[in-house]
Image (cartoon, rainbow, N blue to C red):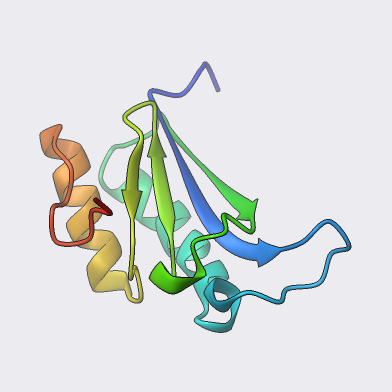
Length: 102
């Protein structure tokens, strides 16, 4: 893969010691990674990389997802429907305002 056009980070709550203590992982954020990885090729988004992230320290907004280089932070990404809305917006070159953290 060449340098990705977009990089999506999904908070999985892991701390330095490896323990998942935060809220994102308890709300199945890791399952969103699998969905993203299956959905991206279906949409022709081969230039997007998905990475699990350690705790992003935004537990009050969990589950959290970030899209770079845009710097769009998303809160309450609790379902495949939410991911679909975020990917729809990404395809259009805009943030998904419903989930955008302000």
